[in-house]
Length: 315
Ligand SMILES: [Zn+2]
Image (cartoon, rainbow, N blue to C red; front, side, top):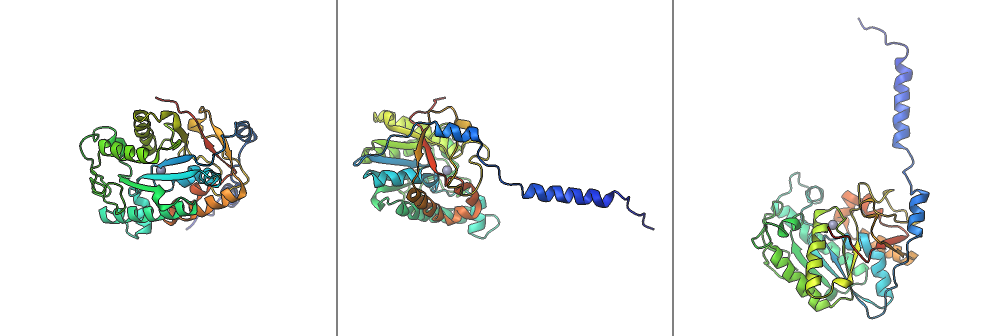
């Protein structure tokens, strides 16, 4: 025998369902007036000049586009020469490899294939940004491993648990077979800086919470200081705090607000014109392996401005 349900059951269930539907369809949070005013009050970054040499050091393929595609486009339009160097091949992203290589547990070979594929995408994005092939350098150090190279593996090779590699294997690496050590990475970075002789070096800030990003900050600062180029460093952030930038997805009319973890940096605003944004969107589109997984995060950088800081806070 079944007991009849209490009379309140149906209305209560309906109420819960309605609440759930309202929550799911909740308009995405926008940018608050206070956040927008803080960005509007920032000084505009100095314009790029003809003949200037601008080098971006990108921890992974796609960082150059997310942080800076718009400003790189402006730099090129102003007659500056733009260079990009990717430190890793982005070959440690297992979830990504699982989707793009269609295997449940991607291992060495699948992740190395992902590395080659992401370098191909990075070159396609750089082509969209008008960066010539001979201004692009791939170093091929291990995705997810840079912090070890700056520590216990400074002088003895690190073996990536993801790819199984302990030396650069990417076909286009600047130094094929270079061991995964901090020493080798410093030597490779030194070669790049010596050859490019950059007027501006765009790198992640310490505050960027991705370990590869804030470890690259340390490597780049060390090498730049050794070459007397430390005054040419400029900083950007891609991983700036939980959920930043909100709202997710492309919102070209909204400003890119200050990243919560790096609010205190002396940010400058780089306003983007419609053509800069169009180029940025096309560059993001070049990353098929990434947009499949992280599309809404990546497109959240398609905003009416980008941010750059002339200083970092050392820790
Ligand atoms: Zn990255």
